[in-house]
Length: 317
Image (tube, rainbow, N blue to C red; front, side, top):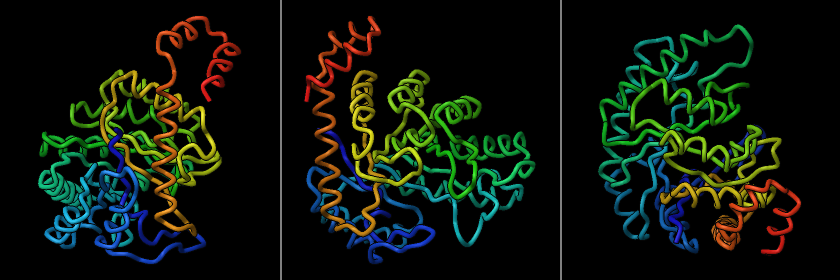
């Protein structure tokens, strides 16, 4: 059985540039909803929002029989780090960031998940000649090395994304994220592969997974879907059915056996309905992927006859 979690932030109020969706909910209310989702095993907790009362958070998780897949470190804040956190040119801001990462790491230890995932969305630029790229990479590398060296038992997983809120994020695709991790050169620094971010970046998620795993940098997976034009955070398989099937096929092939967390927004739909359908769709996609005969598929891949391969795939459904 897959280990499935929901990013806690998507169980409460979610806002885009124009609309607010759902009512604000405290962690206890979010966990109560998560505890009713079919085939769900845990939450990805958001730091610092979910850690205002850590004892209460632990109690809430236990009451709803929920594990923790990761601590989602919010590196973009409304009250600080306006020009970026990892790449801030202000030494005091980078020191503050490292200290907060250390606090988040301590919470991760206490929760038993030993993984911090973060999407450095505000590390990037809107205009040409806005960011000194080399300096930005150097500063980012320095922060990651300091954080990783200070918590060698914690996996730090960087989630790439093409853009938003910056017009161009510094780590936009799997190749860029991998290259950066190799530059950081720490075994506990790797990549969170978000299916929708990969699709939106023009990638084949299965290929991205193989690329990252070859370097032992595939640390974590987020599931969702979109129409390739924007990161809509929709239910898995809503648009990219066969990409999703191929993704699960290759994750099994490369031996990924860790948590999957949902980066899915319910928008104006009933939250419980959305996530019950989300887990149902995930298991169905995985079921289709598991119907693929490995030896037969390897033979088809060797022939590289797409017509034969697609006919075989459609025979499975």
